[in-house]
Every structure is written in C-alpha cells, then in structure tokens.
Image (cartoon, rainbow, N blue to C red; front, side):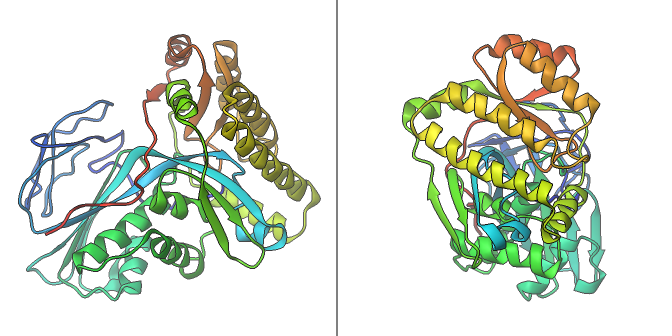
Length: 395
C-alpha cells in the first residue's frame, strides 16, 4: 500500500493473527447472534461463525447461505506494483502521479444491521455501545456514519483477513467496505467511483489523514489498476493490460511474507507530506524516479517480461528505502538480503514502510519459502481479485 495510510483500527475479529475465510455453501453461518466461538488464527480455510449480536469475536470465518437480517459488504486488500507514494496530494498536485495497484483475495468483511436497542453497537478489535455519534471512539466508523447521516439503532461488525498496519491497505478497504455495507443496508446502489470519492473525502479531508488515494481506488475497483493522478486533482483509472500468461506467471511467482510486526503509516507519510510541501529536493527527486519507474513497470508487464519486472521491483526498493529513515530497519534489510540469496529475483516492503509484508518475485517458491521460514516469517498465500468491493449478502 505505498502511499496509503493505516489508521490502526482494523484487526482480525477477536484478536491478533490472521482470519481465514471461506466463502461458499455450508462452510459457515451468517446469522444473528455472535456467541463465543473457537478462534483459528493460522492460515487456511476453516468454518467459523460471523453474526450480528454480542459475544467474542472469531478469527476464522466461513460464509454460508443462512437467513439473517443483515447487509454485508467487503473491502479488498492490495499490493502496489509500481509508483507508490506519488498518489499523495502533496506530490501529485504539483507534478502528477502514477500508481499501479493489484487487488488480492484478502478482505475486510463488514455487516450492518438494524437492532432493537438504542444507540450504536460496534464490533471490531474492541466493542463499543454508545448513544450518540460523538461518543464513538473509532474515527473512521464515527465519521462514515456522520457523513451518511445514519440514525441510532445500528449494529456494525467488522472482521478482516489481515490486521491493520501491514501495508495492504486495510484502512482504505475498511472505509470502502463500510460505505458499501451502509448503502446496501438502505437498499441504495453505489458505484466504485462514488465509493472511492466518498472514502477519500472522509479519510483525507474530514479526518486529515496524510494518506494517498490508491487504497480507496483499488479497494473499490479491484483488479490490476493503473491510476494517473493529475495536478488538477482529477484521476484517470484503467486496467493494466496483461495477458493470461503474464497473469498466471505473477500469480505463481509472487510471494508475501509477514515480517512479524505492524506499524502506523501516519508517521512515514506525514514526513513525506511535509518534505514534499517544503520542496525538499531529495524527497521530490526520489518520488520523480519512483513515478518514472512505475511507468516503466507498466510497459514491462504489458509486454509480459516478468523477469525484467522483478529487476524493477528490486530497483524500486533500493530507492524507496532511502526516502525516509522510518521506512526500513536492520531486520527488514537483513530479511530482504536473505531472500535475495535464496531465490528472490526482486522484491520490496509493501506499504508505507516500517513493517508489514515483504513481497518477492521468485522462480523457486520452495527454496524461498524454506529460507523465510528459517527466519521465522510466515507466508500468506494469495491470488488476485478482480471484483473489488461487493455486497455479499443483502436482507
């Protein structure tokens, strides 16, 4: 999620770790009473329980076909393939920006339900039951509900496949998914572009977060998305034109590994924003290079030259990591070098920096997987998502 912010407010429901989700008939229960349920915090599919009223959270979730008085929407996690950081207004309003993002099959699930009790009942990493909007602690939920003029007697439940602060765009996905669920709750249709604009307005203008806009765009649209940010504030989006063979190559050879810790992107992005506004030459030259490299990555992928893409990933990381002292540390650098010594042809730390996931391209998955496991890193298997935010259940 280069250039995107994390608010630190999403987690797998019921605690740390990763939620494992399965979507299909008979794999879970979507109902109206979230009771105590066993949590599965590792990777892999497992049946679980997701519902809309009280109790302990669940880290392993299966969605089945069951009647429930609930609307559920999703937001999509993603990885940046090129140009990350040039989607911040502090840069593109002066020079224009270009980013390529790829949505992956890791989701934020959000349900909205009318309840009989007064007030707002909110369940995410913690539970809030408050009388008024002003009493809500969760910044994004509070401002989304205020923006949408949502009256009390509402319950919102959120679970996620990945925790916040890991560079996969969870805060942008959360905002998009919540907006989508609330529109479905009121039986209103909303398109991807409107979802994006609303989410950006809430996060950037209302809450003043120093984030970029790619998080919201890719969460709403899905797919592999080229985004051109113009100096007048307008944005042009188009799909990355890759063939089936290239898509299959990327799906088979890209790997994600969790570094073991998360971080807030606000400090890193706040530093970038301040230095860009001050016309800091070192910062601007770095972002100029990253933008041009993003355009080169687009052309390389559209030609189907994935080995060259891997080399460009490495070049990207070499420049990104010197952008700010907060982006990397000795542990991350050592892990990256270790991966390069054991089959990774190129890679980078996804997101603003400081923690989260390492993304690598390799032709020897088994060797790289073992090397990372020896260092204590866990792999998160993924595929690409081409649907974006969707309503998965409607009352």
